[in-house]
Structure formats: C-alpha cells, structure tokens
Image (cartoon, rainbow, N blue to C red; front, side, top):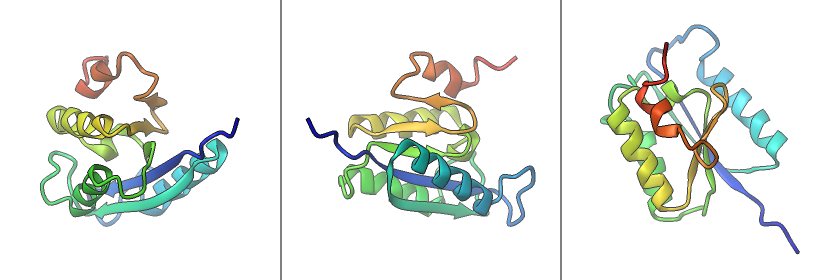
Length: 134
C-alpha cells in the first residue's frame, strides 16, 4: 500500500515590521519548514502577512488568499502550519470560523510551538477560545 504524501501550507504573520521574541517572519518560516521536513510534509504554498494585527482577518490578504486556495482545493493540502495559534488569529470567532472552513475541506491546523493539532485535539475549541488559559 502506498502512503499518500501529505501536503501543507505555511502561514506566518507579524503585527509589526520588527516582531520580538523570535516571532519574526524569517524565524517562523524557518521553524515551520523544519517541522514540515521532519514530518515529511510537502510544502505546497507559503502565505505571509506583515504588519497586520491578529484581531481580525480583515485586511490580511494572504490569510484570505490561503483560505480561498483551500476552498478551491488548489493544492489539495492536508494541513496549515502556523508557529503559534496567535499567529493564526487572536479573535476566537475568526479562529473558529476559519478553522471550520478549513475542516470542511479536510484541512487541519497545526500550531507547532503550542503543540496543537486540530486533527487530534478533541479539546481544540477550548484552546482556541482561550478558556484553557490560567
């Protein structure tokens, strides 16, 4: 039996041109590329928004482009990789709506630094909404 090669998109975001604490676009991309290589995922596309807040998906053109490519089944990806959930979004409603759209097309979210994989985490909605934070 031949195992299907799994494909992913990489999404990175910084809210300022110079993001601190190792969240620069280059640092995020490097970490995500290494993760994809380790998991034997093929990177089908990279999307990056620089200088945009995660409070809303409005204005985040690359994020919206990625979601449209998922809906169009452009690359038939299995996952979207992000550095941390906060890079995907900070608004629980946007995060959950975007995640639902992705899952409607068979695409799961992996937040590498947070150890979150929506294909495996039954409590993902709790994590997304921030209800698990101390």
